[in-house]
Length: 347
Image 1 (cartoon, rainbow, N blue to C red):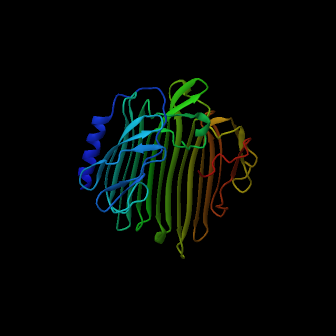
Image 2: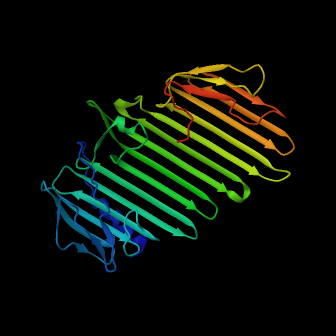
């Protein structure tokens, strides 16, 4: 079965089977992926705690559909469409691979739990795309806001999309993540979204690296503005060229907001421009703060360093720099808060 045909069957089956979503909360299934591609068809085990029909419906080598029933008598229609190598399944696939699995509850309030993956590698290039969907009264699960403070959803999403691209020969990687789900604090419910972006380019031969990272947690509805919301972003580049005309250059621009920012100060250190040591600017818990660091060392003595801190909530900030023949060793500013954590630590 070709991947195009597999995708077409999976999409058509989901469109026919998916009922109107209700809003009562259920439990997201955790039994996806208990199957493998066999030499003559899909081989599926019966998950612990379920009863499965003895003879599932099959078509060609990459399609399986059957009924499974849990201990409470609830029956699901399980559908698997897959193409790949023998033994392939979610998270353990050769190349190329496509897998799509859905569970639709029968005689319930409606909903579908689905997972899919596309994976391919060739000439050092790796593409991996994953998606998870839980919708309807049978599958949508609440999670507590406190479980989201570290930026990890812990498997209670309604929607999760993840894409990874790697070009090993040119040392390029890229990742994207989006999670969406329901939260509850006491009797208050709301939706959340968590976005993560991670891109890295690395040309070792030329001494160049560059990265961009972003993570953002936000809430909708009654929980909008919750103290656990946060935003984090880092842009970093480094250049290191050796030789008589060598140059070393580092740059970092970082932003932080919301949870993880305590009450503190950014204070200028010794080593930069004279007369500014000890100058500081305060920031408060939850503020939107930013820092920039830049260092450059050119063979022959051309040294330069720059460091700035801004409290974008209060419109205040400090900065310091050096000129030729000064140290290029930023940071020249120390940032501390009462959480005993560095707000600009890597994440």
